[in-house]
Image 1 (cartoon, rainbow, N blue to C red):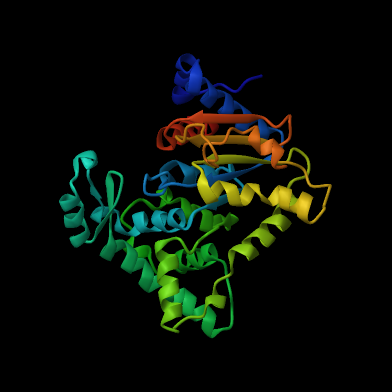
Image 2: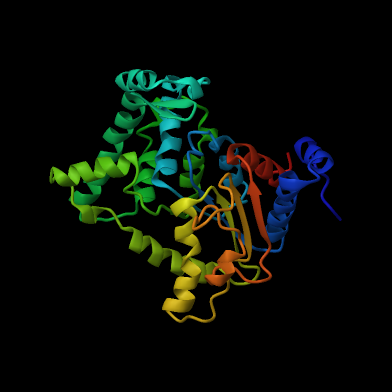
Length: 326
């Protein structure tokens, strides 16, 4: 017997009947079925979803066990915490399409780094985090310890050092929800982030050693172990928001194990959905249709596959609302 849906879900079932909207509903139903049958789900976050405040609903997804592992860019890892401690200093620029180069320069001089229609305040966000995360990095190095980027963030959040700085309801921070659950996170290419750049600057100044931070190769090794331990039964699904390294890095763990390690008992990803505004194109990972992934040993012929060509800041909250029975 089908579960009775609430307002948002009922609206979707009534009106989202064709094209991308129909695919959205199909993908949400298949995600729900995958979990109901005992499967696990990875969500991958590309783009600037944390600055888009995806945490308001993703935190609840984490608390309600609708996601078992997250892969994200270094930007999404840090920007959720920046929003947590500096939200009141963010500046929205709704007319961003009309900005001149001179307007952009004026924002820079004010210490406002623009992400589409939202400016992140450098002093209140970057520097506030820098002071607190450096304490975690240096403390670990002094003890001869090494951790992954997200583990340092977890330590900082769970230490309570930032609590007095909170400027939003902490229940709307997905990183805080993840830290409280010790949710597995993979952060490929972390160096390509503000905190990654800051860490590199300390290494150049010889105040920190690069070895204090575990690497992307170690993330892949860890992920292969996690995948093998969690892919029995219904298996692990892959819900991809955007494209790029946040999606390409983790999905490759399956062909790496099957082809390079020759572990032929490794199951394919058992669900796949990508939300992307990248149109199908030549040579683009983000614009590749799901069937191309069959040829790379990532997906099976029978894996449920969906691609929703739309804005993830619109689509992802709707799918999450369906799963949370809103």
